[in-house]
Length: 86
Image (cartoon, helix red, strand yellow):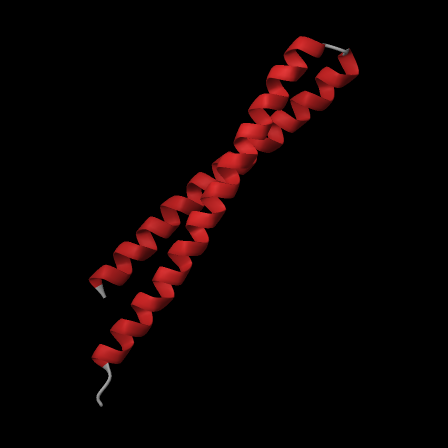
């Protein structure tokens, strides 16, 4: 189960990154709304660019997490087959 534990550890790390980035995205979106209300167009543009980049990164992390989940399932099934009597 050593390799299974390694896959789980990687997936937990990825989930931590995803949660952190999601929090940052929410914070930036809140700032964007405040800036819209204050009509700070220049700063607003910068924040919107940052939001777009974070969304792209969030999507990439979600894809990685999905891939790791598939790997986790495959590794678990492989180890279950090798440890169960035939």
